Every structure is written in structure tokens, then in C-alpha cells.
Length: 122
Image (tube, rainbow, N blue to C red; front, side, top):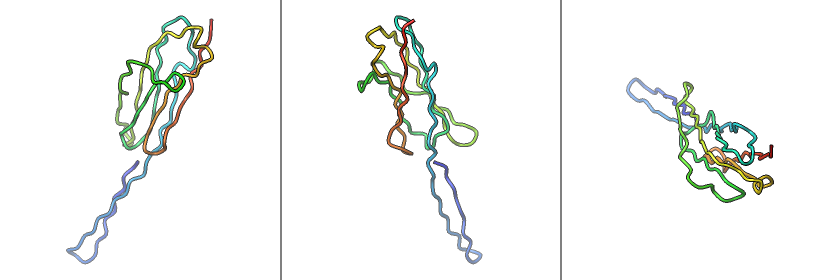
């Protein structure tokens, strides 16, 4: 959400001010987009160019949150928007090969957005 401010001058001593905010919808990507079974995989969910700063990032197996998640690291960009990275490490097994894993992002500019992770055997 970007903030705009306008000033309205009426007579030399009267000044009215108004402001409004526009939300900026995040762009989401996963790195790496594929994981390999029986190996430790270090995943990153990148959320870029959103406003305002409040955001939720969650890793899920099917619809169940994965354990031991850290909050995302949020930084302010030079244009006033924000970016965040959520990291997660896990070792999928062969049983996980057809199970959907997601990075779910919730932000006020939309209800939620999910990006799916693919698990592959060697």
C-alpha cells in the first residue's frame, strides 16, 4: 500500500490535509522449485514488493503447518515497499513424493496466495 498525501490551500491561513493508502500486492517465488527425497533441502520463499509491512508466511504439508517455522526476515526496499524471505529446511521421504507442500503468504492486499513445491526422487 503506497501512501499519498495532498495539501489543499484555502485562504492564506487555512490548510486542509488528506491522505490515502494503496496496497501493493506481493510477488512470490520458491527457491529451489524442486526438492529431492532423502536429502536435506533448504527452501526459501521470497515475497517481494508488498505494502504495508504486515505479512504472514507459512510452510504447509497438505493443509497442515510444518513444525519449527521461523518468522520471515522483512526488509524495506528503496521504493517504500517491503520484501521478505522465509527459510525452511526438511528432508522429504518417498512418502512425500505425491503430497503437496506449499509456501502460503497472507497479506492485506489479498486473502492468501500459495505456491506449490514439487518433490522428486533421484
